[in-house]
Length: 307
Length: 294
Image 1: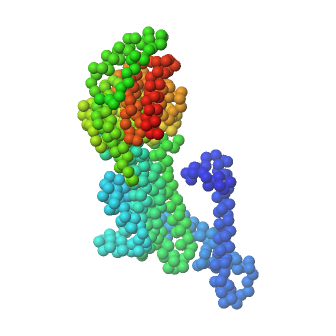
Image 2 (image 1 turned 180 degrees about the horizontal axis):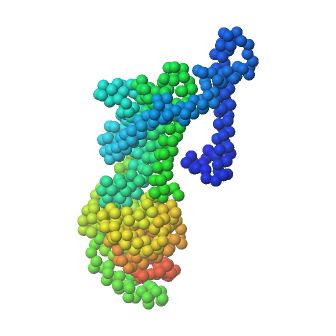
Image 3 (image 1 turned 30 degrees about the vertical axis):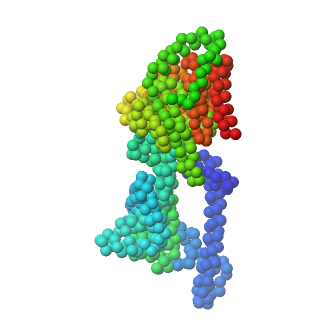
């Protein structure tokens, strides 16, 4: 059963009742195992602190009390799932959105930087790809630098970008968006170059027999053939863009954003806050990738590929 | 101009039934072909590919003239340069020596003037365009007004028997239908010269017969110049009025076989002695090429 599920394309949404069961049962099973492991790990990791406290207070304790205590600490090493869930609910639903304590507010800040960075990165990536396809000079001169740019750890670059842009008078979203862009143009460039080169020789010969201009070859052949590659790389890019935005919030001492929540959580030992921010970040990632997938399906349907 | 022309006339006898029907069209063909201007003029043409180890002579000293309104087939084993010769005519390959004109100008000028339609071995349809939009493609590129484009596409889709399939995408069609779309696409901008590179090679025999018959009808009615590459002797004899027999390494013309079967022939003609006689001469020429290799 699990192999069947794995073989299905990720974008297939369940429609009928049987398909819902078909999809939810394996997912629920994995989730249940995850929770069991998580609770066990919470006991194991938090137990030393709890035992310390019990012994300091001179109390005797049963294993039942120990387990309960490890699942309800204020600052646990690893909070139990229900604690994270409670914190997540508190900061997402029970706090006004414009409050600095609202996780939705922080997610909004990060998403703005992510989206600006994504648009900039996709534009840069596509532009570079078009240049590389049409100018052999760029192919040879630019590509090594593009690859080299990605071997530099983003954590090393991010503070410099923030400092330099800060000196130039830019702060807030822009430095983070630039870091996002830096991370996400690369998959777009690589994917789109591959896509623009994907037409087979016959299709290119055909254009030649029509004496088509370069721009006609581009718009009527290369660009449409690159669609599949474009969307595959945009999905990678938007996820990378989110990571870029979060990383961009870490060295700035930013007051807002998921990165800022992660950082302040670790400063003050607020592990639940870290976990909530992590869950929010992955939710945002899933939503952003899904939006790109949806756009892909719409475009593919127009191209007659999907039915 | 040609390296060798067999003179089949003395051996050429039509069977009773065909002779009656053929008598006048035969003269018509001669009238139409003989005085018509030269569409493709090739002399002393050679093409050498530079490969890693040694240069490969794809074509060597080709002399050939194709007149307007002719149906000329190139036949020969794989690697004899028939496709390369066609690509030279289409300015998709550049000869290393010799002279070639297409409609009196260089192949490049002819290509820029959109003098020919090229039909490839594979349909080479654009997967993201439906049948209608595939046929519209060349018309969009030459900048034809939208209304005229639609009318043209409809006309030629009907000609290849694909009305009602306009909204289908290539993957929804059989191989034969896809190739018919590609033929409609080549016909749609109404070139005087059609270059067909084994267009039916990948199709089953029934579909191939059917398309051969349609193509012959088309040629008979439109009098386009058609250059046709094939592996099949029977296809070449059925379709063409001249068959250029080629041999490989280096690619060269062995013989040019004249075929004076009536232009409005049907598939049944393939069972006549006249047809078999022409096929026999082509086979003999091909065999001569092979013995050359041994």
